[in-house]
Every structure is written in structure tokens, then in C-alpha cells.
Image (cartoon, rainbow, N blue to C red; front, side, top):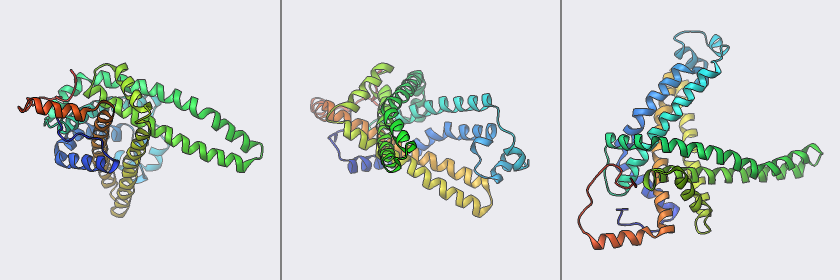
Length: 315
């Protein structure tokens, strides 16, 4: 990697670098997200309004004057909703490929434009889909294996009358479930970065991220990173959603709520993505000593590397 100041960082330093990186490339990053995310939001609003509306007013808006009660009582066909959801997921995976490429290249000291980022994103799109499917299976099986026994035990204790013990065990299980979810979420994100910056092989990307997630030196750090990731993403969306709902209610214009939610999600997701890229680079520094490699490379050659799209990735 080209970044000349690579070294193990604290969480505060990681956040500082992520914010700095995000601000420096704010417009290109948001443009890369908006080019896909805005059409996806519009598609969802038009095709499956029942899944998105947050008020009767929004239902009237998307149904062009139809009664909210009638809209609410007319469910969307299951196949229709599934098709729109699938298209949205696949489109967003392409978007994340482009955004990860753009941010990782910038962190490496190479500015990549929108078109170049999306060209590389298309080349790695199938691999990113494979990573997502792999982690869907791993997540379901992992959660079932880790949480089945404590969930059943707490439920049985509650049913048998030991409500205090059952409630305590249930609370511990919930906290454990949050920790498992945070760890898995971050390891999945590390796989998504690895498929763009280290390898095009799905199994190798999953193996790389799992190795960093379970290694003694980094597993607790991955858990902490996952918790920070979750707080940033879902906390930001919650705050923005609340403000958007207040604005929509105050102005009686549900389109304002819809638009503010969309803009807020884009802004929040861009910052979180920058954090993931910086966090992934930091783990590589800790596990592989990339800080030493970067210093050695800079001492051997002073000529700058040719700027190219996806310069940080292994082709």
C-alpha cells in the first residue's frame, strides 16, 4: 500500500482518519453512491410503497391520491416484493464495490474517478455477490449454533416459573447475540474489502477475513470495530430517521421525510464505509506488517506509482 504513515492505530485515530478521508473525497464518494442508491430508492418507493411508507400521507403520495386506507389494505404480491428486493440488493452490491474501490484507492494515495471505480466494480461484482451469499450461510449457521442452547434454556426456565433466572439468562444471551452479530458484521465487511483489495477469489477472501477475525491478536479488535460500525451506521440512521419524520410531520410534506431519509442514509453509509476501509488496512498492518513494507518500498523507489483505477487491488 502506498500510504506512507501506516502503523497500528487506536479506535480514535481510525475514526479521525476515516472522517478525514471521507471529507477529502466527499463529493466523489456521494456521487458514486447516489448514482445507484437514488434510483434504487425511487424503484422501491414506486414498486413497493407498502414496504416503505412511514405514514398515511406517504401512502397517498406514492399512490397519487389513492386513499391511505385502501393502499394499506392492499398488500403487495410476495413475488413483486421479492423481485424488487433482489434487484435492490444486487444494485447496492455493485455500488459498494465502486465506493470501496474509490475509498481504498484514495487511502492508498491514488485518486480514482467515478467511471473507473464502476468499471472495476463491475469486474468484481460476481465475486462480491459470492461473498454475500457465503456470509449469509455462515451467519445463519453460526447464529443458530451459538445461540440455540442459551435461547432454549432461558425460554424453558421462564416457562417453568424461574422467571428471574430466565430473564437474567435471556439478557446475557441478548448481549452475547449483539456481540456475535457485531463480530460477524465486521468480518463480513472485511471480506467485502478483501475481494476488492487483495483477491478476486471468494473463498480466499472469506478465509482471509475469518483468519483476522479469530486471530488472538485481532479478534477482540474486530469485535470492537463491529460495535463501532453498528453504532455509527444504525445510530446515524436512527437519528436521521427521527429528524426526517419530525420534518415531514411539521411540514405535512412526506416527500421531505422520504428525501431526507435517503440523503441521510447516503451520508451515513459513506462515512461508515470509510471507517471499514481504514479498519481493514489497520488489521493488515497489525497482521502483516504493511507499515514496514511501505517504508521499505518508499526507501527503494522515490518515483510515484502510476495512478490507475483500483491501484490498491490485486488483479
